[in-house]
Image (tube, rainbow, N blue to C red; front, side):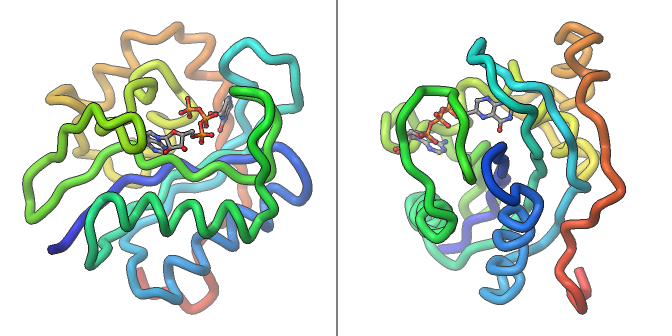
Length: 174
Ligand SMILES: Nc1ncnc2c1ncn2[C@@H]1O[C@H](COP(=O)(O)OP(=O)(O)OP(=O)(O)O)[C@@H](O)[C@H]1O
Ligand SMILES: Nc1nc2c(c(=O)[nH]1)N=C(CO)CN2
């Protein structure tokens, strides 16, 4: 099996930039990293008052199943000392699987342990903006990312700010 997946990574506690880089470095070290967006500063989504997040998107190609990709992300979260308390609240590192293709076909699943595509991705400029950068031709549930972004509040889209910091691991050839 071969699974190409879109990962949204983000956090707003601790050294968020270092934690995002640790995910890109782990993906490069494991040989699964295919593309990485820039790092973005993003206002908190979801109504909980908290610090701004740093977010990015990685494209990975994993030899296992989508569940293996989710487990790979959990491992990164555990390494970052992630705890689960407030829903949509502050966190050191969150790794969400946004969409996955297995052997070239998109995966659809309503399993609560791994719902694909991620049901809230279409509402999240902090996912769509970096994803569009990392994979300009991508679609989500049949819609080009540009169209999905066009349906969001323009103020929410422009509040997602690209930073100069790079996520690409040193020496990563892409
Ligand atoms: N596509 C997915 N990506 C990541 N986790 C998922 C997905 N679908 C279901 N889950 C499940 O959601 C559970 C909660 O995940 P998490 O704590 O990261 O949620 P959250 O980041 O607070 O909220 P959200 O799911 O809205 O991003 C996880 O235990 C995981 O099994
Ligand atoms: N900007 C931003 N907001 C969030 C984020 C995130 O990664 N970025 N993650 C959340 C938990 O799912 C809740 N809200």
